[in-house]
Image (tube, helix red, strand yellow):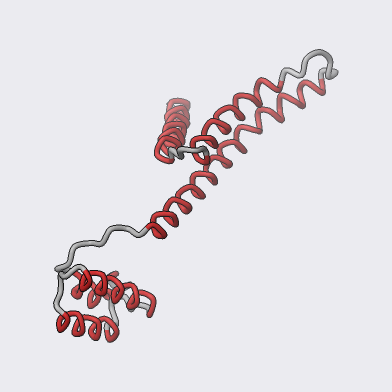
Length: 160
């Protein structure tokens, strides 16, 4: 496979580069002549390396609000998927406990609900952190990573 810098680029990537050049021109970082030359070179560029050379001496532009929203939406979607996977894995003990409760005659208090609460409470808390008024995506990610690390440690200890 080719180096990433030698891969061919799309028209969309060329447009993105020319938009960046326009913003640098508007900020006064490049002259009109230089802007024209770079835009022409951007439209004729074939590889990522060629585009990179055109922008290498210019500072990175701040992320636009639309790009920021898209990044947050993508990250939130990934965290939501991980939360659902984790909750789904926690439902197996609830189902087993419910079957035991039913097999034992289903008398008395429905005690498997306490097993379900162990799954639901973290799911609701993380859901609030994910979609609440002040989203804390980093906090949710840290908690998911911590739980995954705990499970890995437990599996490793069982092997020993």
